[in-house]
Amino acid sequence: IEGVNLTPLPHLQDAPAWTKDPAVDAYVQTCQGTKPGDRIDPAYLDGILAASLIAEASDLFDTGRYQDALEVYRSALSTPKGDQLRVHNGLYSANWKLGRRTDAERAFGDVVRVGLANNRLGVKFLFRPGSTDFVSDARLSAPYSMWMSQIARTAGARAACLQVVGHTSPTGPEPLNERLSVLRAENVKVRLEREAPQLKGRVIASGVGSREKLVGTGTDDVRDALDRRVEFKVVAC
Image (tube, rainbow, N blue to C red):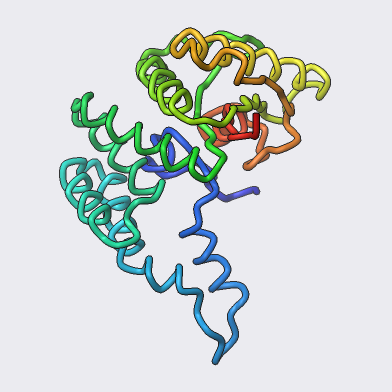
């Protein structure tokens, strides 16, 4: 959209994962589908305190006040509806910025737990253009081994099977995008099985090219990173 800055705010750029969030869905449903006098979605009411703290923490993160953001994210976690992806993403990002790798790993474990409990977790593994190799920039790829280990550990402990779905942005011919997305998913599948051998026979890889894009700008940069995610879906064995 001409004249509009589509660059995500820092707390969104640094968030490692995405999932369908019941708290966000309740907010959208309340805003879009509620008329005067209608009953408000209880999930929205229950999450108001957590949402206000998440907004405050996100603003602090966006201005580089990572320690302050961390403390407010912790406050959000302690609320009745605090066990949600936005909180765990924030705890991960703030701890990572502060160099607290153990705390960041613990927070990412909660990201994975919440995502797989919702049967769908998109993780921002970024690949080199046209390749199945992860980006070489250590600022981006440094946590990938830890992410993979946490995903493998959590998935390995579940009785269900896992579908790894590759995605691409909508640049280039779609048949090539679909093939590339499959190969990237296969790469991740192999890594998962290496981390957790008990997953062998329980993981399938597939790709959808750009058919399920979330942003759709086709800029192939930080603005549409979610379109190049790898998704993990819990499926029946």
